[in-house]
Length: 103
Length: 257
Image (cartoon, rainbow over all chains, first blue to last red; front, side, top):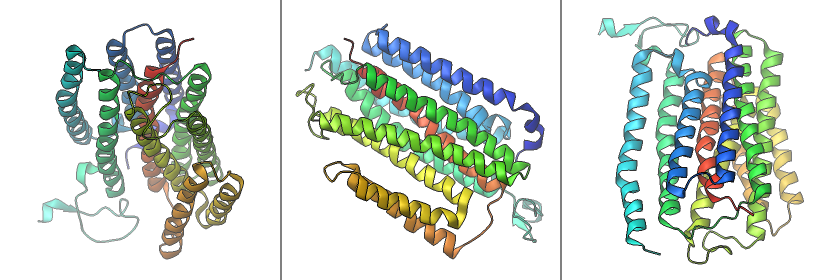
């Protein structure tokens, strides 16, 4: 088990993270409801905010920030690499369909 | 190989002897859960990519989510975020050996999770009532894949939340949870109208009841702080996945009036 005892006196940081996640959610709702961007740009902005939120959850709530460096980097690099491969395969193709004007 | 083994009674809960050094220096249950979550993230990643691909390649994508749906989904998001905070508090309670507060925080987490499921089920029922199926939707007849991608992605997530609530119930209440789960299954089956999809979906609880009973009756044990922390990892992952589903599915399909 990680050195959880050393974190027991810092519960406040989890409330800050929770508050930050709620604020980021509010920003997302505002962006979505006001339709600030066109669909593709909106998707990128919302995905960016989601990545920030997920990083907060993984680092603090899931305690990965407090795990060993080898564990942090092995898990992060392997999962991110898979998502990058998915992104590279699918999204350029989705954009190509748009440019071709296929209905 | 002597240098690849170590004595780690604290890791193996008092079982003496030599063991292979744990991967990453963490105890094996935690590493196992992380590896499961890494593989599960690819399942959700594939579903999210499929949804996003369809969304941006279809200019006629339906926008069925009006203001009340967005408010509903925002409350659901707040429920899951708050449940993660209560789960963190449960882990702290477990680590200091405070059993009453461990149970209280776990029950609070389950309460938020259950609220999420109920709100989501109401949203599904509303959409189905408006004529949406996995193969058709009334808003964009030329985009039939909306229903399939929506129900698959959100249904998979709802299943994960349901499993999470049952998992936490087993940790918090152990055998006491079995009759509660059975009562919830029966109540759901008899109270949900037969024309509602959740009249049959509630049988997920029966499957959960059987699996929980097998675990609790065949391998009864006291769950310790490690078990609570591992359960917390699963729960936070469920929260994490929703952080992508909410903007992609709901906010990318808002109906502006």
